[in-house]
Image 1 (tube, protein in one colour):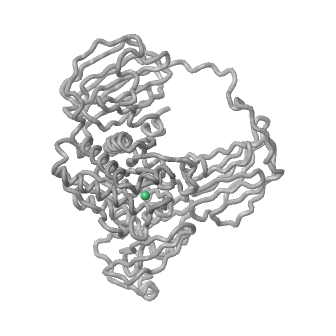
Image 2: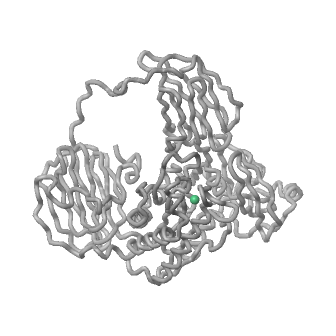
Length: 595
Ligand SMILES: [Zn+2]
């Protein structure tokens, strides 16, 4: 313990003094909230992927805490009241006589974004942009907790007029359409600074304006008035931003595909291009195939069709798909984990391997099933139910089905209790679970304007977790008939941090969002026991598929001579039955790797 200088005072203030937990290793940490370093008399403490801070630090994230019951051992429950939204409960630990709360866990609950820098021993917490609105005379930016001053810049040049609002400590996620309220024809653009610490809102203006910051120095709702009003700005012409006279890009030349069998479970493939390329990847089912589609490219070699011996890839071919696209198709023995990246020279390197925790049989595997939320943490409020209840209903059905298939199933909760977020993956780790599956239901948070469907998340770019998510998502959308919102990295929701339950898992982990509780159609299904059963069966089929592979994939097919005309080979166009489990560069190719 390195922070006991105030121990005597703290002991008086914090009446719930209990002996310090001997297992906690103290380590001074810098806490940065909304781009401002927070100075604390009691230093934060890091323990097992969590940072514990004194209660006073909650003020910085716009929250307050009140004791909730009597302390037990070295723990004390608190009710946390955020700047907006519902109270939730949280377990503090008593460390050196101080009640210390898990700030990353709390930040997650507050919808804030946390980023741990190991080298600098610094935890940075950024507010999330909740809403932007512009009515022509007032620009409002709402954040998930109060932030300090915003920097307004105007840029008036001959060709462009811009109003730039920089907000340090604000994270800008992909906002749902209804969170950007724009009553004008003035385009609003949102982005982050290169260092990822400052959120930026840009208005592309038709004329110069005067601005004034109306909001107080530290606020959740930054308000800027603009005069004269831009309410009646005419619509910019459709192609106003289209550059004129730009020559079309020169197509990349794809000259080689090669592979190396690492072992029976892993194959590396590389595709040589003469310049950096753009590509999309697809993982297909029935039969299992992995497809790399390179756009604005042409084949500078003979189409190739190669048998791969004794590994997870059985066959590999490359051909022209259409006038601007080259396609590589890899036949797989089963769903695989993949990593793909591109070197500066343009070479696309791909590895496909048996995912972690996969292989063998479902029977005998240890699987943690996590019903999201519980107790005071209700999760999303639906039209006709609370998220915590339908999560548990589906989770209990998954438990029964997995058990009857012979798996060892551990539930993070089986009743209506609140289990702290970090405790869920922690529990899975302590029991050496092989897989972690968290069950949730979605909501827009604001009036749902028709958003419906199923999506499944994995952490960061973890390839095994992504394969697990793909297996479950493909079974779910086939079974529940809802729109396929795809398989997504949790970085798409919270760049740099993701979801705590996935981030904290050491085994392949996935979080399923079954349906939207605030969508009338979805909400009508979710409480229906037949629907819940269908969903649970699909999740279990997905888990089985991940572990055991696809029973429908024939072990090996004969090599067929390549068709040179596009569109004649059966594997060239995914049919509806072979709908990509995942598609689009957005969800599969981490930004920054592709130029
Ligand atoms: Zn949830």
